[in-house]
Length: 230
Image 1: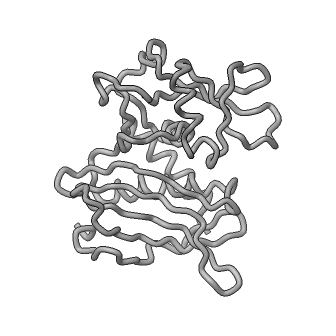
Image 2: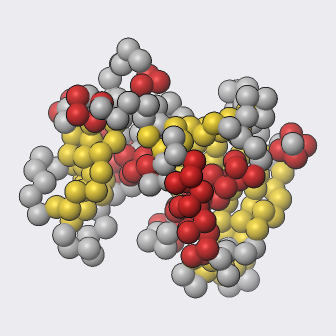
Image 3: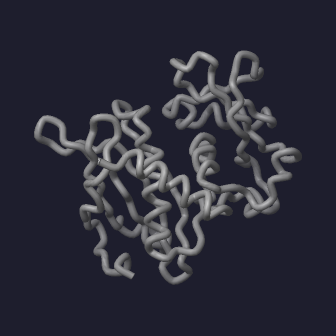
């Protein structure tokens, strides 16, 4: 597998065939320096040319275990000036397609994943928890909403567990990712539900998201990549 041959901290051009809005991307693949986890960590970054310089627009990063043939999604970041261009969607599709192209059998999320709307995005690609009945019984359910005013770009969260809501409100991602905690869904449009345990749970794997519908993922990736293809 060519991934094993990549050198640490080496950037290679992965693709120049995609754009978001009027921005044509140069997509780079990079194998990061060892972070002590024992697993290679990779980045796919989207850059664009502005005033003669390459400017980073966003990135997705993930672990890959070429022996077990697995990949675990760690995180996604989009620079503020490039938000609302669906770059995040493109990068998720690129990661999933990258895993399929390299024969990885299992795709999952990092156990520390704490971003509700990222899990919502992954659910659209066929990711979910092993037992969806937990959405009805778990105290760790978060319902996701958007304002009926579509110009409002905040991400609204209604927690089933008030203690979890308080913990999340103190996290940096609550403000940096434009989340808003609500106590009522009046005037809101329901999007979906996700589960994120902010307290200890007996069975962590029961609430770990992984790819459960590969055919849905293939269809979704094909649609997103086609929409962004030049």
